[in-house]
Length: 98
Image 1 (tube, rainbow, N blue to C red):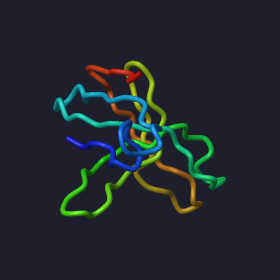
Image 2 (image 1 turned 90 degrees about the vertical axis):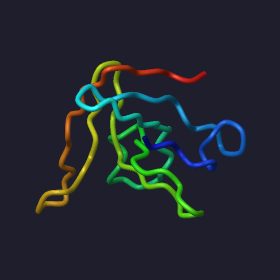
Image 3 (image 1 turned 135 degrees about the horizontal axis):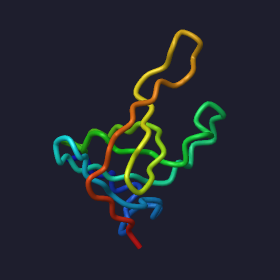
Image 4 (image 1 turned 180 degrees about the vertical axis):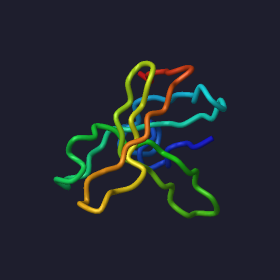
């Protein structure tokens, strides 16, 4: 399970968190938020998929991605040209907060 940190949550943060989903292959839960980074290399990705949870005050990690109803495309690496390498994650359950 990976939850978004308080800095993007509804109660304490900027309220940019948008929803959550479970992976079809192993039922792992991930939350995602709006991508508000101003960098040009991530402008094609409207979401941040939170992949680790906060542990002992260490901020959570995320990957840039595109979350749809039944699938998510998540940038997991970059190739030799600096372009993102995407993984397709099949979703079993998706929930939009709000």
